[in-house]
Length: 410
Image 1 (spheres, rainbow, N blue to C red):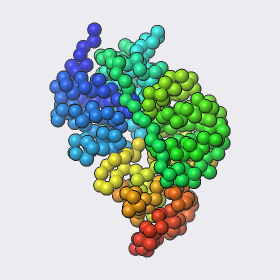
Image 2 (cartoon, rainbow, N blue to C red; image 1 turned 180 degrees about the vertical axis):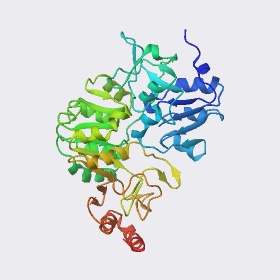
Image 3 (tube, rainbow, N blue to C red; image 1 turned 60 degrees about the horizontal axis):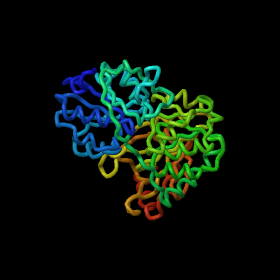
Image 4 (cartoon, rainbow, N blue to C red; image 1 turned 30 degrees about the vertical axis):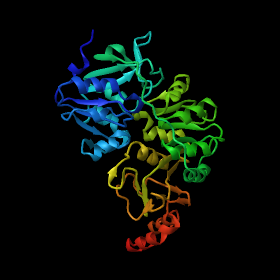
């Protein structure tokens, strides 16, 4: 019999918990209700409200403002740790985020005595290998998926059994504007291209726009329902990838119960640690790699803000910059930022003189797309960048942007 999980977390410990579908909700509930507090908890994107129930003496921190984290950051309840996903393996293994305790969600042990992180590997795989103590939520809803997912049952210091449904992320229907943007992105994605596409409505629109392509590849931080359906239907075959040929590679699943079922039945799916998914050398070897990510705003130099809107932290650095930089450096790679030209019913331009927060440098992006057009930025002057980006703004906002460009000397 293992000791109660709440007795294994000590004051002063750094506890690292999984995110999205791998968020250990039952474990966190037990810790919040029964532990002595005084520890730190680091986590990622939460799809539930469990973090809002943390006792006041549990110090919360994370690297994204998505999901419940945005409200916690705004309320001063959670501290932000700005970092690229690619930095997390080192931070968690040998750096200041090395955990005392890792909280994971795993499948029941198989005949070889292995439990599987079947919905998330990304950063939690490194955390589980580095932690002094590993606490698990064993849930039969977690599938066996190959990759960086296996944990020996005897590595678990304590566990709780759970049969509750995993958290879910339902895909949203793209708007007409997002579909128009996707139609402008689609020409950059030919047959055989390997994709990384950010999650959300714009990503869904891009996937729909390229559903007729042949032998696409996929190498991304997260995969959801639509991507797994494209694998099932033979649109994504990964046949032409320079590495992981024939395999769909991602760090985690972000989808519904249907996505989990598809993942369980897909032998060519691999969930890998961010040490692999976000590695520049791996991405550079894929060939014809196209990275497509959205943003909150883009400024006249081509700098990207994917974190702050209206003074509130709602996004994150995540893996977007890792993929943008790797795509721009890869042979035949393209680094694309796709964004609607306006927000709030057209009253706010998302092409701006200067971004509120620099997530990606102007050197990280070579294409910006809105519903009004496409701007190629690679190898051109700052003044020409500004002119091309102003042309992507909504017509009503262009005169103000032109005045700002003159004031900035562009």
